[in-house]
Image (tube, rainbow, N blue to C red; front, side):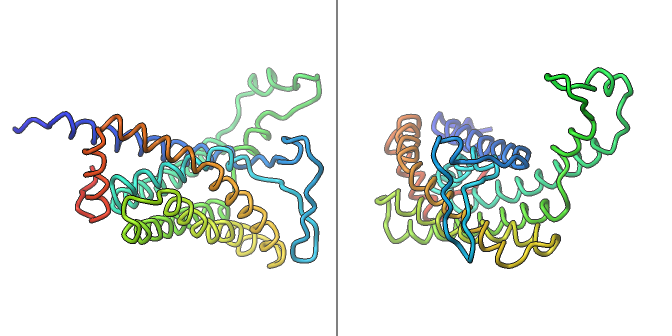
Length: 265
């Protein structure tokens, strides 16, 4: 059997590392997304009170947005060096694992709790009565609508992101990394921000169209700002990969990816 070259080994490791980073952060974001936090309270500023669709809204966000930018960046890097095929494979695999994760969570939250576990955790740190099993279920179990909304929005967002990224890559060549990365993210998240809550809270819930537009707009504004602010991180990532693979090898890999000649692992 032919022995792989050092470059081939590095390329394989890079692809696996990026996919692992992508998959891990996507799953973490789904798990922690149940918590809603105040961006204004975090920054110590007054409530935004943005006038949108007949009301004033603050920046109350799902905790999942904390590490979701890593998914954006990783997706763009995979697209840059391994093409649309690489991104689509890890995206489909991630969607399958998200569905699997929800099945496991549903099964484990349905298990009867041990009595000693309830008794040991019957009070919180302040001495207040607490139902640990109820808290466990409330945190980890999310409804079918949220699960479907997350998976559908994730897949649509990824397909749009990789398509726009590749379209811009063909027209700009190796230049303007910020344009194809930020442009593809802004476009894909415009759809993603509304699809997930439309499915979860309109089709499977009781939200009005106005509420969907309000919350979706806040989510998109936040994601757009994050996409712009994390652009320097993308350049740092490219610099590190160029050093790891060698500048000429990295450029060759990126050119192959743009031409769709690379076959992902």
